[in-house]
Length: 254
Image (tube, rainbow, N blue to C red; front, side, top):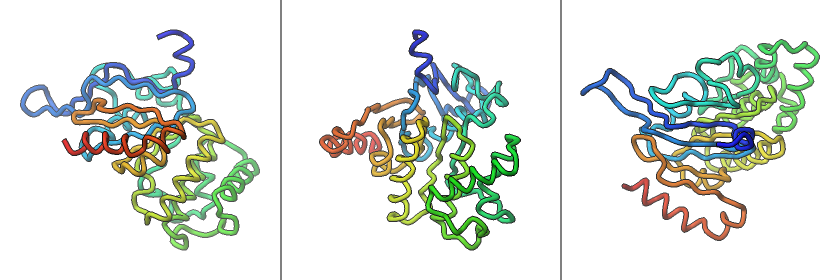
């Protein structure tokens, strides 16, 4: 890998394996010798059946667990051993909104900015801007219980973008929403990622969602290694979508 390649790579997993349990009959291999590089500015949809290792990969990129073998680097750093280096540089959008019920919408968006030590005025201005961007103007002082599921997830997305993190990790953030709400939010999320030059890894088990979200789709088979890796230009999405869908369905049905 050249210096130029390293500069363009946001996330790199090289020969990564993750084994849970002690060696022998009780050991479980979740990830097996995985090579995966994610370019800066890429929107990667990581697709696979339940239990294929998606969440394990997600947790290694997030620095929540370390690989048994191989190396994981994010922006050139080890996310597990250099966890503090990622303050404000990585944000996570969870399957549930994870809002604090005792804080208003704007106070929830301000949370990451508080941790980063931003001033009260700066926090408020940034949070207001992102709530307005996500269509929540007028709901700044509402508590989570007064918001719909889609609105709460909008607050969660606003919270992630507010820190201006370069990398967004998304763990099936729209799976609990009805399909019409989810589709609208997916489109808005992709637009915001692209407009703001972010790199995103989006975990999903839905083929439709992967095709809507990704400019690259990686399909995993168990234990997590790559079965399909396809780049999707807008033209390819329109012309080859059904072919790609069929390929993915074949892998997931095996």
